[in-house]
Amino acid sequence: MRTRTTRAGLGLLVTGAMMAGTAMTNPAAAATTPGHAGVQGVLARAVKEGSVPGILAEVRDGHGRWFGSAGVADTKTGRQRRPQHRFRVGSTTKTFVATVMLQLVAERKVSLDDTVEKWLPGLVRGNGHDGAAITVRHLLNHTSGIFDYLRDQEAVNRHDNPTPEQLVRVAMSHPATFQPGASWEYSQTNYVLAGMVIERATGSTLAGEVARRIARPLGLSGTYLPRGADTKIRGPHSRHYSRLNQTGPDAKTYDLTELNPSPFWAAGGMISTAGDLNRFFGALLGGRLLPPAQQREMFTMVPTKDWIPGTGYGLGVSSVKLPCGTTVWGMGGAIFGSWSYTYGTRDGRHMVATNTNGDWAGGGWKDPIGIFTDVLQAEFCPDDSPTP
Image 1 (cartoon, helix red, strand yellow):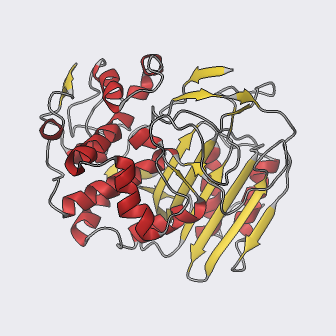
Image 2 (cartoon, rainbow, N blue to C red):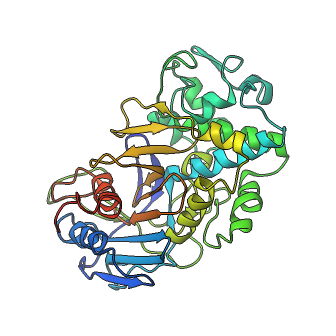
């Protein structure tokens, strides 16, 4: 069946088939370092109590790497989730885009104070939007006031394979949310525009720049931005399951592993693995991808509004204050059938990447973010984490 639907702040144009088979609870952990029993306990509870199909986590710290999982990668076959499995990372894409942009800033090819009008003349205009007043910095830290095109799913769905320009035009058909710099609101349009600026400044594709500047140098073999309307996930991967925003015991579950990524692109279209995400964020937080000046810009945080509680937002990165008071840095992402979180210490030496291949959670968790928070709490605040 063909399904067109939305999730708050995410949206999706997908092709899916209703999931068949029975979910299995099958905890598994493969460790190269000891410990992390608290994290494994949360993973097991997420499947048993939260009813997620499968969940995985990788921890990297001074002792090495640990991988754990629970549940299944495929409800038909019962196969387990593995370290090499690729998944859609949603808004974690934004961190890669911001990193490329800040590298261009360091090379003096772009300035954070450049206006959108300079790079994309005439595109951001109308209904209170003014590209001459919106800077690249406003785009990257979500203070532009530009309407989020995914809030108008009906208009997005009029295009089978929407181009970035078409997505921006959807946003321009709505009033701006506020004047540039006056407030904060998460908007996918900001990063579509940022991706377009990168392509204009480099004369290359965004996918090519991410690969050349980040994925290949870091050896991220499972990380890439799909081109166009490529619906497949290349390489080993788990299935991605969604309940299409439906709740209750009778909610149907759909396999949405294959979907059209063109409505997301620079805002949320990338694919990666837990290991690649930890390696990327470890290098980024550790200062190995940006010069000091651009590193300071990226981690200059502004308060968020009506978003995830306890968070701040920089340029493509966020900070999360855990219930125990510890703050971690990284980014999360969600798209139908796949939610992920990658956060760690400010120096990048201790990282945790988590992914669930279902977009719901039960057992007292409102959504997978609650599960991810418990994973982080178990790893970074073990004395305060919930008892398994």
